[in-house]
Amino acid sequence: MSFQVAKKEGIALRKALLKKAKRVVVKVGSAVLTGENGLDRDVISNLANELSYLAGTGREIILVSSGAVAAGRRNLSLDVNREISLKEKQAVAAVGQSRLMRVYEDIFSQHDLKTAQVLLTHDDLSHRDRYLNVRNTILTLLEWGIVPIINENDTVSVEELRFGDNDTLGSLITNLIEADVFICLTDVEALYTANPHHDSKAKPVITIARVDRQVEDMAGHLVGALGTGGMRSKILAAKSVAARGGSSFIGPGRESGVIKKLFSGKQVGTFFLPKAEKMQSRKHWIAYVLRPKGYLVLDEGACKALVKGGKSLLPSGIVEVRENFGVGAPVHCIDHDGKAIAAGLTNYSAKDLDKIKGKKSSQIEKILGYKDSDEVIHRDNLVIL
Image (cartoon, rainbow, N blue to C red; front, side, top):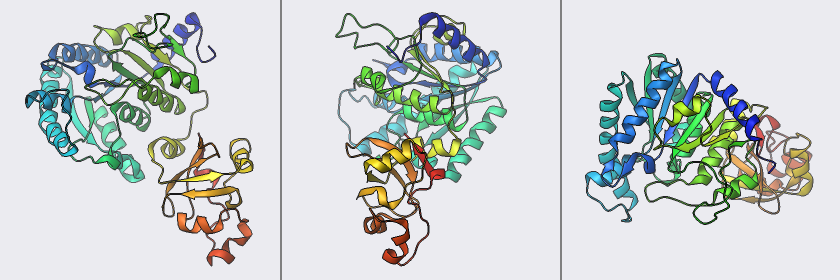
C-alpha cells in the first residue's frame, strides 16, 4: 500500500523523530481512563509514570484529557448507556471535571508533577487574538515546569462552540504550541488495514507516510460508549498535525509503559510521519481551526487555477454561493462533486457574492457600487486542502 513505509525504514524514522522531540502532547480518552467503577486510578497512575518518564528526559509535556462526563456519570450513578440531554451533559461535566482534576492532582503529585487545569471551547481558538492568548498561557505553564491538563469546557459548550471530540482538541493544541509529537492513547493497539473484530486478515499498520483517502477509509466509524471520537477522528487529527510538521502516534493507553516503549524505539502502535513542507501557522489556522461559515461552488477552471496555479479566487470562477456569511468569514471552496478543495477568508459577503458570481473583477464596482478587492479570496488567505 502506497501510504505505508517499509517496516525497517519506518522504525528508523520513528526513532530519529522521537529523539529530536522536545515538546510532547499526550491525549487520553474516556475509554482508557474509565471503567465500570468510574475513573480507573491504576490507569491514571500508569499515565503519571509515563509522563514522569518523559519529564525526566527534559521534555515538555501537555496532557489533553477526556473523562469529565464519564467521571460525572459515575459520581451521579447514571447508567453509561443512558442518553442524556445537552443541559444534563453540561451538569454532569461540572460534577465530573472537579473530580477528574482532583484525581490527577493527587496521583501526579506523587511523581513530583505539578498540574494546571485549562478548559477551552472552540470559540477560544477561532479568534486569532484569543488563540494566541491560549498559546501564551500554555507556554508560560511549561516554562514554570507545570503540566497543563487541557479539556473541553463541556459545562458552557453548545454545539457551535464544541470541538466535537478531544482528538481534534489534541491536534489543535499540538499545532498551537508547535509540539513535535502528538500521542493519542486509546483502547485499540493500532490502526489496522480493516476492522480486526470482523476481518481475520486485518493487519496493524506500523508507519504511515501520509494520510490519504485510503487511510481515512480504513478507519471506519466505530464509536465507543464513553467516547465521542473514533479511529477516523484520530486519523484526521494526525493529518492536521502532519501538515504543521509534527509526528503522531496512536497506541494502547492501558498498556503499561507504552510511551516508554515508544521512545525506546520498540515497535508499538501506529506512527504518522510529518509532511516534508510545513504549512505556515496562519494558513494552518485557516485550514484546520476555523469552521466554514459558507461554501463557494467553483467551476472546473477555477478549481484548476487554485490547485495547480496557486492563484487567488476571482468572482468569475464561482458558480454558486451557499449559506449566509459576512465579509472576512471562513469559507470552503468546493467542486461540482461537493469535494472541498480549498479554505479561505472571503473579501465579500454571501449577499454580494451572489450578485457578482460568474462576473469579471472589472464589473464588481458597477454591480455593487463599490470594490474592495479584485479577488474574492486572496491567495495569502487561501489554503489548498
